[in-house]
Image 1 (cartoon, rainbow, N blue to C red):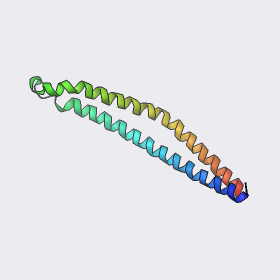
Image 2: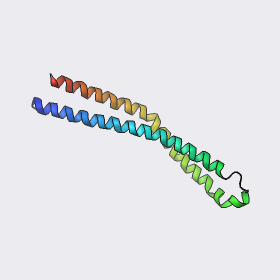
Image 3: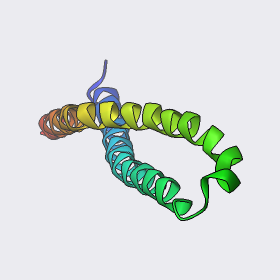
Image 4: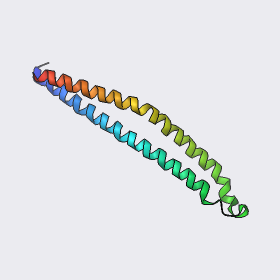
Length: 108
């Protein structure tokens, strides 16, 4: 492989690595916002009809438990993804640094 094509390959690898890192950072931000949104939704769902008489809200009560269980499943996935997120971002950042160093070496 020629020095030019090796440099080009390293450059485009760096661009892809940066894009992947940025995507992971954006995803991490999304996960935080999603967890907050789900928490608010659960709180609002539980508080929204507490003042209503039980006999009037019976049709809604029948769906509340399955709704909150589904939100709980989604929240569990979000929390699991958040636990993995820091390591994934750190690995992506390390790869970007490695690519930058390789590119700098090829510039010389």
